[in-house]
Length: 524
Image (cartoon, rainbow, N blue to C red):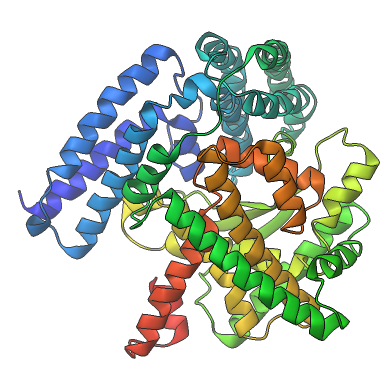
């Protein structure tokens, strides 16, 4: 057996195991045969998975450099970094701390079935949804058994409480409408009612847990730095990352002041951004329409300027964010096409406010999606940002890279794309360019806040104040953002960190005369 066969066979074996323990991931990637299953989230399953992950890590590490070609080494290192990151996080025991561990697969597992139905027989999709809805009570029961009030942070419990409430509405009132056949719809509705009751009971449990929870959200410097170095492959830890973020923030704030002076005759960029934020779509529906318009503009510009190669058959759908996502995510997001099913339809989700949000807060959230900021957000999420990147990357032949990756590359690419479009003259108003720089400054502020929160050197309220005064977020959006940082350490720092690394690689590529800008984008 040659080395190539050894690596490929190991990857195939690993992915079969991965679908077994992560059937919702299998659905997201378009792997057949797992759509009626949910993950086992009992304590025994987490302990069993830890042993199995360690075994996989040892097997990938045993593949020596000399026996692998460059592509195989990348695959090996990608598997090692991912598994090592899971190993590092194990002692933190997220499954005992964060209720999202249980609410997210319970909701996403059903939602993805309908999002990626792609002409499949309705009965297959509906029956899988029924199976997953009927499994929701067991998933949430595992959460009640596993979550520990001495470990769980009240910040994370309260965040998940909103998702549980949205789960009630989704399961009871919305999911059955996805099915047209009356008999199948009735089956889904009955299963949805069972799931809704389970979400209601879990919400009551979370109310009680929030009152008792005393655990921290901060993972600490040692773990944060280890994740940067060993999972993301960076050469520095949390404190140096914060210094880099602060330096970038200072440079970008100076650029904002200069641009503001040119636009408004003064250098108070925060005041100008607030003025621009006041000019926003009047309703969430109007916001979606504006995003759709700018998404199409960005696509046409990329084609005209030949900045990237557009994959055949790609299509980006701009639509409201899922109801259950709205309480936990206040910004735009993107879901890639299923990697193993073919097709090129991705979904750009516009950040609708949670159901029941008071009218004044709806307007504050819309202010974070002003007419001046929508162009650069559309670039980030669609062209040549996430949608182009991820639909193009699906064409490459390495199966493992369709399954696992780094948020530092994915989000770094999205932010890099924003600056690229400024360089290429896409934005047709100086205010649009100001908002692009503001979006970059926001990512620098994220680095400062995320590291400071997890180093234990900034409180939640201090972080909310920082993001709503040092960046241009409204207070409700800043609060939702900070709760996200508490729940997902190191992710918020990925955007600007990754963008700077991609720019460094690009500068080297062009300086060495290795090809055109389009060839660089396609290659990386």
